[in-house]
Length: 248
Ligand SMILES: [Zn+2]
Image (cartoon, rainbow, N blue to C red; front, side, top):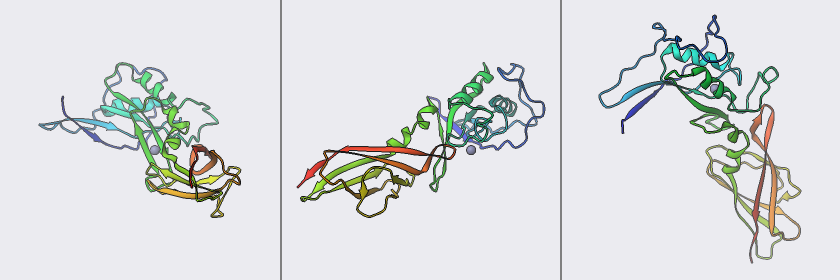
């Protein structure tokens, strides 16, 4: 198998082409611009690919249609470009209403046509953690990220039990991600440590006591996750459920 060295060059395209292209497939004559060409040589052991792994269009906070991103990439002689629209940030939503988070990528693929440029499906995920902006690449369906799949995979009740005749339900909630999640209790139950606000550290586990009154065999808690957005200004809702065991 041929070894390949991917050199990622993040480029912020701040200058917009004045002679904008029409929408749709770019002409086959769309060619490299010798003045813009970005070049790195192959090594003896590796083939070097030039790629832009982080781009935006008007489908998030960019200022041009995805077609322009492809035209720029072709002019720059890139081998690959990733379309990484923000999942949660769409300042042009009033002018470009859309639900499909793959739309920008699909327009870019159509614009690329039969050119050799590789167009990669991506998304930029925003979290209120030290690594607050994360680009996911090689997605099969960006809509799955948008539907809280990542959140429900990250937080989990790993133990739920009553101990020693207690009426207080002990819950251990684990965080399987690198984000510091901040769920706020929106359920009918109150917690013993008198706050409804939890902070669950990356790869950490938080134990809470839930006042259920009578013992229950199944628990379902609703949370608003204060630092996870599903669209601009709308926080994620999360339900955590588990069977309850008795440890008397
Ligand atoms: Zn970005």
